[in-house]
Image 1 (tube, rainbow, N blue to C red):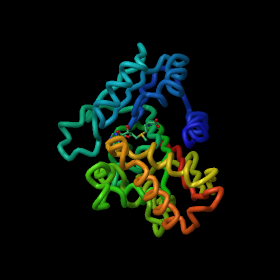
Image 2 (image 1 turned 30 degrees about the vertical axis):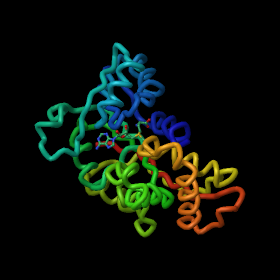
Image 3 (image 1 turned 90 degrees about the vertical axis):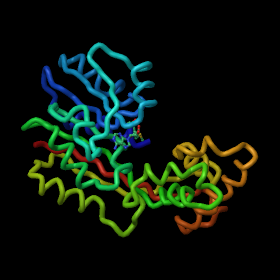
Length: 257
Ligand SMILES: C[S@@+](CC[C@H](N)C(=O)[O-])C[C@H]1O[C@@H](n2cnc3c(N)ncnc32)[C@H](O)[C@@H]1O
């Protein structure tokens, strides 16, 4: 839902030029590159590099979105051993980071490192979901019954992403300013997001939980009940409420170095 709404705006606000190098950081399956960056690369004779920490995602992107102007590779800018980061000496003119930062605990360090990869005059665009309901993934990752299936979510969701006491947009803005970046677009919102009932909300949580596929079929009903119960508790609404409403929060920005 965030991609269709925000990526076209981010792309529209960036100042594209011929023969640029473009990085899609946390490219996942390659669909953002394919839908939004390949047309730009073709128009401006530019090159796209997609990077993701997950070898499976990179393999999928290479198999399904291969393009003469693109290259997908495995990497994690957050590794402390800089020699393991394959792009350490490479700079880019444009960097897009869509729905990735909420996986990274130390977002200040991430912004420092990613801005370091930008050429002078280059632009960075980020879209970041952060919302209280994501606490469900954390709770399931620690739950005595579910952690053996869903413990993976502890590593892949940053705790700040569901901390309602943090003013995340202000915190990010001051980091961007402290890095001396020019702010071209900075937009955050909190909006109610309605699911027809708790059932559809539960489907959404299961679809975004990397460990859900490991849960045996005979436990799926119990897992759904647990998610519905936690959703209602965290969002402070009745599980029988129709529609079932959560608050969706998103931060989008484009900055220039
Ligand atoms: C929700 S997906 C978004 C994928 C893609 N950007 C999109 O919007 O379709 C998040 C991706 O970030 C990747 N990721 C998480 N932490 C990362 C890190 N430290 N470095 C690189 N990729 C990371 C995950 O492997 C996953 O593919």
